[in-house]
Length: 279
Image 1 (cartoon, rainbow, N blue to C red):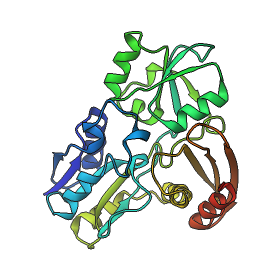
Image 2 (image 1 turned 135 degrees about the horizontal axis):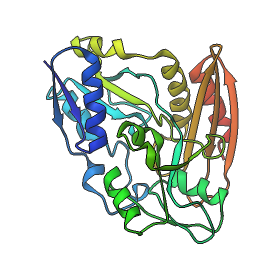
Image 3 (image 1 turned 180 degrees about the vertical axis):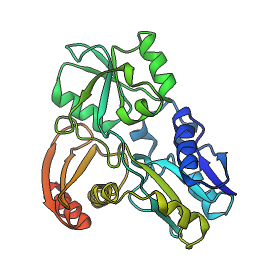
Image 4 (image 1 turned 45 degrees about the horizontal axis):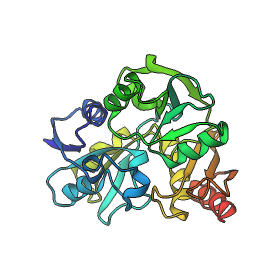
């Protein structure tokens, strides 16, 4: 029996069940509430700290209360606690951000809790009113439907996984709004003990997704790996060559920098581009 740790949201449970269905062994899902789940009325950038959606789950792994954890990879800090490993990165879903509701126009009230999205939205359309929006997917959609916002921004991958792709009014190209590091990908985390859970999880590995996300996370690590700075990075793989594009700015959107880097080694690609974009 492999015990899988997961947050309790509809999307997190879909992700955990999806991984469970691929493992082909007997599993049980253990719901764990994280700091990020408990604090719903403050923008993530103001909560502080790393691992807001992973810390308690990782503690359960280290305590042997669970055997395997499933996360949205974009929630994971760039450094893992000692004794844990990313045992598998399955094939990535669509990494793009999606607009739901009305178009972006002057005065539109746009809901997002992400500094990265806020800054890039302002760069796309300066006359928007960006307003904080927290909660799970259902909560955010309800607030949109109630008219609290004209438009909201969510990850396309989560909407597709929940069968809500029909709610998407526009997909934003990655060269216009660079996604969060790891957006669209799942992370399967285990103890780094070469045990049964780690070995079973490794069967779900998708090498091109691993290469791309390793480059993105190497870029993030140079900047400290938190959510207090607007950062986006997105890598693609073509003929074994990694192409990384990234974005970073001050929290207020000033001194925005964008750049691109190609190469064969994901760590070198990510770190070299980060050094180019350091202030």
